Length: 365
Image (spheres, rainbow, N blue to C red):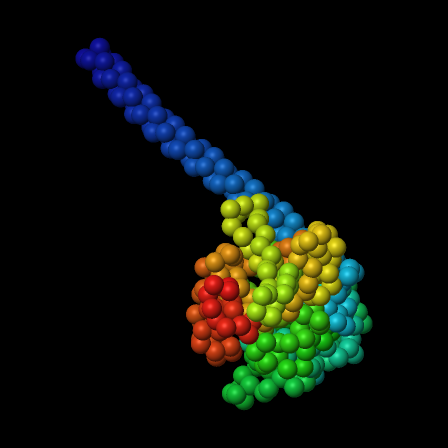
């Protein structure tokens, strides 16, 4: 009986040991799985941190690029008339409370120096230009300052001649569109004029400001659409060769230039100011026997010439400070918009000869 009991006890202990070993093995599997999960979480966290750091570096690079482009404009020879600063209003905080009821608050990065008490202009939409006054400036620390340079700020402006909201319950700032341009660059008085004559002499302040921020916001669809609207209310300068023709009329030859990205296509070079065009002439466009005249073109004329048999679109400000390429396919879409047709008329961008006051003969394009 004693031996039998011992055998039973031995069997029970063996069973317990097996169960204990089984539990240990299960825990080991669980712990290994948890360890793998932790490693995976840590790896993902490191990836996110690395991506955030890369994004921060890219944003810092683009910000510096925009800043330097603005400095070249504001401190160089291509300054738009009267411009000492500009800000592309990338935030319109409708919940922010102005110090004075009825005023409007905008936010953005200041290029140049803005001062309180200054009468300035707000450009937006399809040729809207309003006169307002800078009432208050807050820096990033939420402190009121009299002036600020090349830094982010919140600006409180008077309503000026900006129309009141149609709905009385709407916020005062609702009349201002995101990516509106605030600047002391004067531009021209009649922004509704389809040809915007005189805008090239004034330096296209709105378009100049938008181009400087293109690297930062170019992928934003709202910004991109705003740039397209801005181009349609611009007047450009191009370089051309004017020669007497046999019929007594002058013939015009336009330049075509290529890009590193597209060496097999020719683009019409256009400039946002007379000063930038003059600089291009000095830097090689005006070689002996080559084009030596500057011509002002409306957007419709620019579209027509850049879509002829010799060009695949147009290049804005080749040589900087910021250059963008508008491909022929995009010009086609712009010409097909209701905005273009309402502004310039049906078919205004279809024939270069007609656009320039010629006969419309395709052989002359």
